[in-house]
Length: 292
Image (cartoon, rainbow, N blue to C red):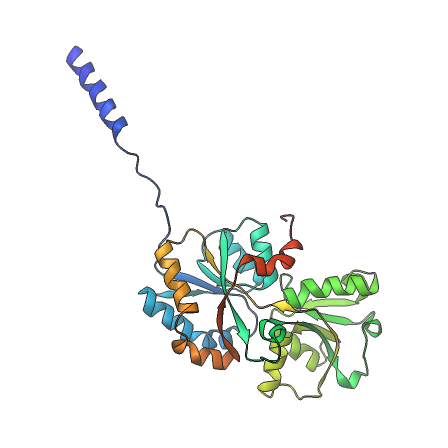
């Protein structure tokens, strides 16, 4: 009995001295999961991002799984649940994700090809548009009409517009307008007002400009009746738990040699990717200082 007891004591001492199996210090996912907010038609958006996806797969030596994001909220939830590793977010959806505790870091954004001023190259606007043949030229004429927004978490398609309506009319949007619909994307909102399904829409100036370039809108078809101050372009974010070597390679794809991505830049009418940080979105983040 004494020998058995001695053996047990020695065994317990030995096991106690062994290092515990530590949890992985970082994540190295295969495949890498990449989400895009539904800024416009998902199929067109995915086609435009193919050069980036191919280059990521080449440099990271793994498959890139593009995670469907039917709404801005689904991308946010994916980052919170760590089922998404890399994402393009709108400024407001980034702010919402951080306010809810997402462990993410913005590292890249893009710049417009419009170099007429530093402001136009680095930002876009929220625009309130109506059909020109309606004869409307100010917000006050839209009381009791129908309004199209994009997504509740869209910076230019919902959040800043709601603030502008309340500030200029003294009423919340739901009280000022007879009906509000959410189209799901900026290009759908443009189609809705163009076809007369709604009386007015708020959309991003970048999507409006693209619709004109592609001939989907005639130059005099819609009337601008309000425009927001400049909004910083979308941040691309990484999960903080990604292994440093993996994160560094992702950054290199975005911010290194631009040659493999020139086709994408041409399609999006942007001049390239540029470094960004949380500070660039500080004013937007201040709108969501208290977690929801």
